[in-house]
Length: 154
Image 1 (cartoon, rainbow, N blue to C red):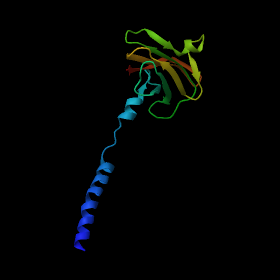
Image 2: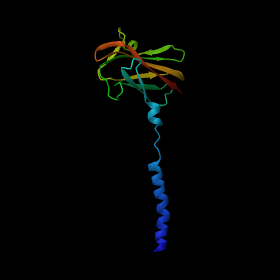
Image 3: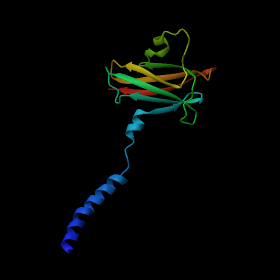
Image 4: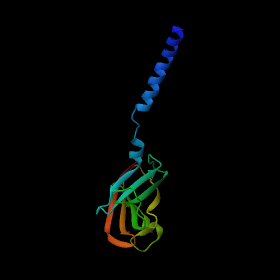
């Protein structure tokens, strides 16, 4: 009977230690922090959350930039935002403008739900600037504010 108990202990102990090691090890957070970027607008009225997909961003593959306009200091989405999104290369040349693409004559577009998705395909690898500008909140014009994000394209 002592031999059976010892064999069970020899098998069970490493199994328990292995399971505890997995459960107690810190979970990597790089996936969330690498794909979701949050910045306040320049005037502090909102937080802008930018989430590119897929990650990594690769030239020649469409990237969808999900943008949430959150109430400042919270993760609550702010509805009814007048906005624009531009993408510029490292030299500062503007490659994309959401208002122009939509064929609008005014300075901004409008989202009723506070969440937008911007599709874009990068043609070259490098560092790019995504600028999200805000012109109005809840149908009230504001002095333009913006949040800028840097993204790397492979």
